[in-house]
Length: 529
Image 1: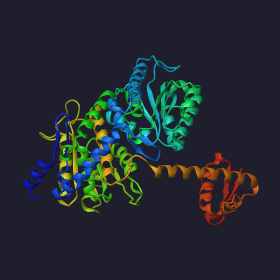
Image 2: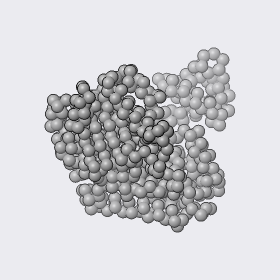
Image 3: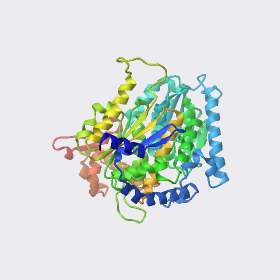
Image 4: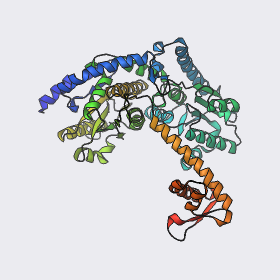
């Protein structure tokens, strides 16, 4: 295209919502009018499906659940008065507890006030709060946030050691919908042990966010947790940031969560418009479908040109990939759908993988995220008439141009600033786009059988480990090889897993196993010590 043609295309495709301070440009996705007209009927159907979803239709037939994360910022749309009151009362309670903590009314026994916040969760129970904490945190936050988002013992030790005696003034927020998520449970038990080591009770330093009567809920009651907040079965983990899961950590940190909810609600209004060219979520879904031919053939690269948004790509990895990565469609046909998501931030990536984006395999499309406001306060000129922000903007526009000149597609999202309102808008935008795209490709965005399969497989490995350890102990000093133990427990088909279990245990002396290796690694002898 000529420069004039590109300008005309930009003007034609630009979505500009001045009330939101938001723009979306899909002109560099090269969507033809023929393609647009062909997809429009399907998108109109997806609007109807979204209306049914928001009205309370069963969207997750596996578990007979509604999907109601949209109600979190518009309780008046919930299908019954009980849900509306639950949402309203939870937000009130979140703000009340944050206020009590900040005023020192809810305080630890051995300190004047809580100074630090430790969020213990995994997946949607950690990614959303982490993204928001980094995007909106300031040096003068009311509480300093920390996160345990895995069950890596070394990672747990690093976080707890960093807190050290500061645990005395640390409030732990434990987040698990079922209450039985192993990674979160392990993090909680490790944290409770660290409190005990310092002569502190865990309960008065802890808050639970979980389903009523879950294992975590019962544990919280037994241990006298400071408070408990609900997770509802109609909110999935990856869409839970605007429930207590995200609102409580943010409010404790000192972030204005009412503005996050406001921004999300305003974006929801914009993305309910039943006209594709006037609906930014529909335009995103259309662009994704066009880029990957409705089959996820192109990866989604997220490049926010703002350090505060560096974690946005990780947040979107779960939202997009867990929602859209499905083996079968709604008709039971094997389709292997999904869109891979990765990214970091500009202009850092100019010195990392943008080289491949421009000149390597063309298996992606880029989403540039532009933040108009450079910084709070005044800056300096790094060259006459040029600021660091001008350079950042130049890198964005230059990279966008360089990619397009080499046949690589991109779209650009622009917001005025990184604020609670704009973060809420971005969260709501992508939640809606994922739902609309799922309808276009005829999949269920609201279940995750692959995740459940992984959890079951992990549980079977731990069961196998217990039997292997028992067999090793029974052999005593004589010891045996992995093949010996696999045969003894009747799991000869699992000998590789038995070998890897024994290698893991023998690498950690406290586990009571030692090994002797005189020949090939796979013939090592393991014994109890």
